[in-house]
Length: 49
Ligand SMILES: [Zn+2]
Image 1: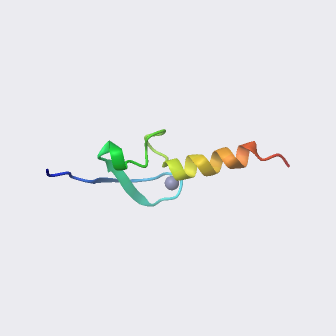
Image 2: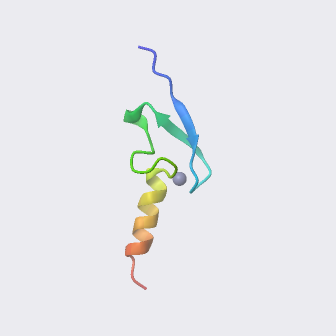
């Protein structure tokens, strides 16, 4: 099996992260923003001041 990993630069953290294959993808929820950033944003917006 020849799995090619495709990297994509996240607009949130500016880091190249795996986009393909989908199993390893960090962009499952958003095409431009990685799951880590989304999780962080969610945590931020949910936190009450
Ligand atoms: Zn990110």
